[in-house]
Image 1 (tube, rainbow, N blue to C red):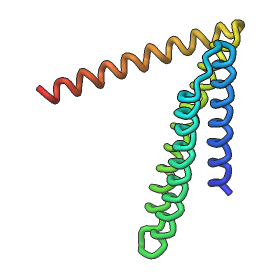
Image 2: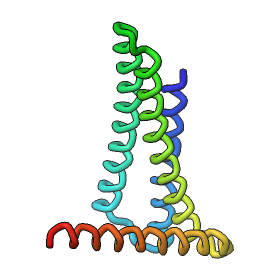
Image 3: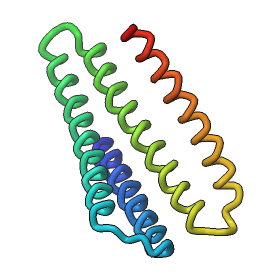
Image 4: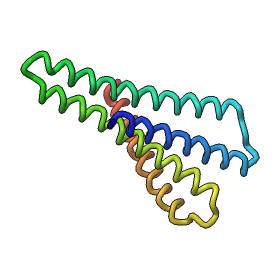
Length: 137
């Protein structure tokens, strides 16, 4: 039942993100089949990754029953699927909030939050690029 709940949550969030993105594009008069196709395929990949994580958890737990590692196997599978679920959930919620912030002129609090998140993301990306540059030289 847990897997079904996680999958339904991810599917629901992906659908909500897709719809809010579609609304945003309509309001901007910027509908693009290429962007929609890319966004739809991205959402499909998220669902596939979540399904794979749930399958991995179930498989690892079942495999652990054949040895003396049942508890460690079950924990590792649970942690894996939980982290994937948390990452996709947070990522989708941020994207939905970004869309909402651009759709609604009254959503000032959302725009402030998104600015902070973007600033954090840009700093993190710059740090990663600097690290990559140092590794190459």
